[in-house]
Image (cartoon, rainbow, N blue to C red; front, side, top):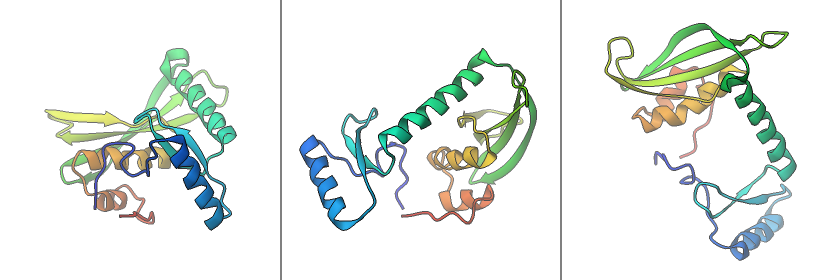
Length: 168
């Protein structure tokens, strides 16, 4: 199994528009699923995606809205934290926040992933983006934990996502 820390490592890369257009034509012949291409902000090359440009823009607007809410424009308070997994010296802690400026006081979830001892130190940690559902934070934690040395299949099981298929 290859463990990638580069966000483009698992994606097929096309270096020219001609190459990506050729791949699009080939995919249209093989499948009815529409594909689109985009220029990657990480590597500067092209990748294919099933997400239409309209869906992408809608997703980006939702993410921007979420980040605005969480970047101090909206107050939040921590409701709870709980340790949920430990694999190969990597620990996950789910934190639940309540957004105070919302009429319905929405809850959002983040997952902090640690190496070392988070209680006594020293440790290194990273946190996922915040999500409206716990599952989103847990899915994002897989990449972080893997980069910190956890086995991704063991991690999925430990955080309760054991039904997810991992492609190798």
